[in-house]
Image 1 (cartoon, rainbow, N blue to C red):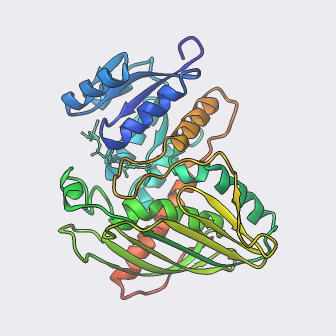
Image 2: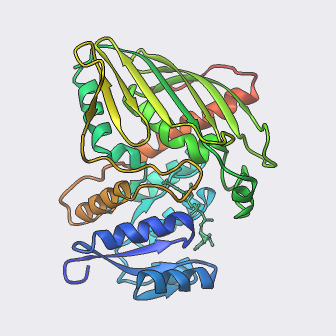
Length: 350
Ligand SMILES: NC(=O)c1ccc[n+]([C@@H]2O[C@H](COP(=O)([O-])OP(=O)(O)OC[C@H]3O[C@@H](n4cnc5c(N)ncnc54)[C@H](O)[C@@H]3O)[C@@H](O)[C@H]2O)c1
């Protein structure tokens, strides 16, 4: 820390790194953007200039050898996260790691083990979980205010052009993206679905590549059962042009919760027209076509929480164990799809 402020660094100066840089700057009272690092020097240099970071590195090893760095935002391709996070743990740096934590549960186990017992904070990004409406919905569901959860459905029907997949070599590959419309994009709403419905207990899925020249799926359909006893459906696709509103719906005995990627609404018999949960504090989820059009508020929240965790004042909001659950469900979907829709079960609910 310098003058009581966390010295933050960004590893991976691509699309989402921009949001981390902006969110670090938005938390200027508790953190500084001290360093940026990318293996492509021009990208690192451009970030340093744009976001006024003090230091630039072109090798992760050099960044991690710098004792001034307190925390690192991991913004590299998904399949590289485990190696990068474990290197950060060895360098005694706190991390905020982008979704998915990595693309296989076994790799995430390595990440969890690397931080276990160190006392150094390590957190995952699932920005929707930070939205005030989602936090209020989770508290209401857990307190049983809406009775039993009966049905839980989600859909992610957005658009990614061929140019998007061509924009970086790792996109749409099993090795580095780890999957398609679900592992990269739909993961956000699937996470909220499982989070609110009490964890997935089983999944049966059909995943296909309908239109894009990619290895991974551009559409996924699934049937799910949840720890709460609810049953439900999920669909993701990156082929919807124009995009359709993202949606997760939780149908309970005494009401229905609907989250559209921005607002969380509660509909009941008394208020059939609906009431917004966490009203006035929601964050924007973007326009559905631009992968960069993600609201900043969630990242501001998560970085601020990590700074507080570094000072020993808060627990991390989304620990790695939580980030792993949704990746397990997604890998279960892919396994089910490869086996003609066989039902895959999760021991203690995901
Ligand atoms: N939370 C969200 O809403 C959200 C949105 C977009 C992307 N993401 C996630 O962020 C991650 C990155 O996605 P992106 O779209 O920004 O990718 P990107 O390709 O635009 O950026 C990745 C950057 O990492 C750099 N890089 C690769 N290996 C490196 C290394 N060893 N050291 C330093 N730099 C390295 C690349 O050169 C590139 O600049 C992915 O895991 C993705 O799923 C999250």
